[in-house]
Length: 524
Image 1 (cartoon, rainbow, N blue to C red):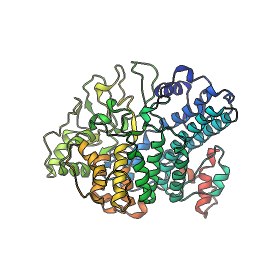
Image 2 (image 1 turned 180 degrees about the vertical axis):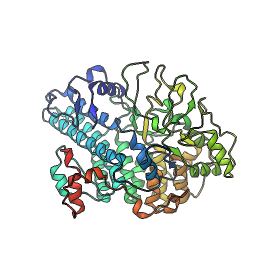
Image 3 (image 1 turned 30 degrees about the vertical axis):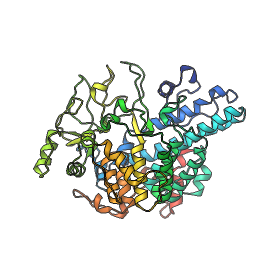
Image 4 (image 1 turned 120 degrees about the vertical axis):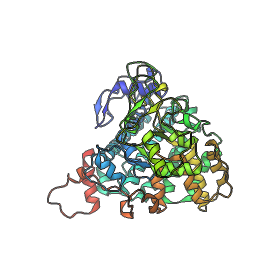
């Protein structure tokens, strides 16, 4: 269970653009839940603190979460040979209910949801004593938290299908009502976003001056589009994504390589981005995500003493060959860190590897051969020369983009090619904006298959997007690659065994809702 430290929350305040006066010692170290009784709710200057707590919840993702959410796609292989065998098995659709990653993803997501619900309750208490302006501010903060909470529900439903919708910090009644279907969860998200949009700033996240990079109405529109994409309500997808496009506020960052590095942080492309920092100091406080699992296990960094990674997240041969056959350079060079061994094996398999492919990155880091994988993810790589002096952890302080405008454009194009009416640009225009940034020629009369290919090229290794596209369209053959055999019964992970073990030994025959009620009982 995560621990809250005032130091970390204070640091997050700095990341989000608050002054020192915005954070007080009210948020002391505690476990499990934001304390609803330690704030003076008659003092509106304290109102920001529950919001900061919610953003801290969202920022402190477990290192295993993005790996587990992404590893089942045909764009990613597990890597990590010799360790975490169940992770490699998951990549091959062989699921072990007892695997700790499954339990962690479930527990951390629901724990964060309950804590966010506590933050919402705190803000509701502030409203009882606030004037009109402060009530509006509280409503905005509540809407921001609901967007973050909805994203966590979104992950849960895509991973396990039927899950709980939790909107209370004491969810006994919600547990008694049982699980909701995936469709019900997605509709809940859509409805929540409709309400949130009215109270959120009409701005890009990087335009906000109070909380730079914070949630805006366009973040909510993007999440609504994602939910309806899962529901296959493509007109709703086109409408929500079209609202973002028609705003005229967003554009693609010009340099695809630097988008995922320091220069691209909080760009005009970002709709939801988790911010991390060490504040440019050689020592002292920092708030990091652990990127080491994504990194190569052996390298010669351009900047001395920069640490290597663990080798747990490997771009697949299938994806690399797909990109080479398309004539991709910018996106391939950005997305993959190559080893000599990996290049040699591609050539042995008959792939004509282009000359720009090398084990030296454009930033001068040399990726040496290592046992656990042949390639590593370039999207989770921060060049050693961009590390703060004195900071040596792999990709230390790098932000993590969750939703970006390129995905919105491609969701919109997909919806149009599946029969939705577009109120903004054409599907061709949406796809070509993405292709042109990557140096690829424009298309005309774009088809659904071409959009899926473009999503494959553009969004590989990001949050499992490819996997969810393939299961949504029943493209099981794409997921059955390199000896893997994907079938419909493998779409969702099994519920974690550690949760099921909480059931009484004599309970040998119970319905699904009863099982799931017991699974969440430890959240109270």
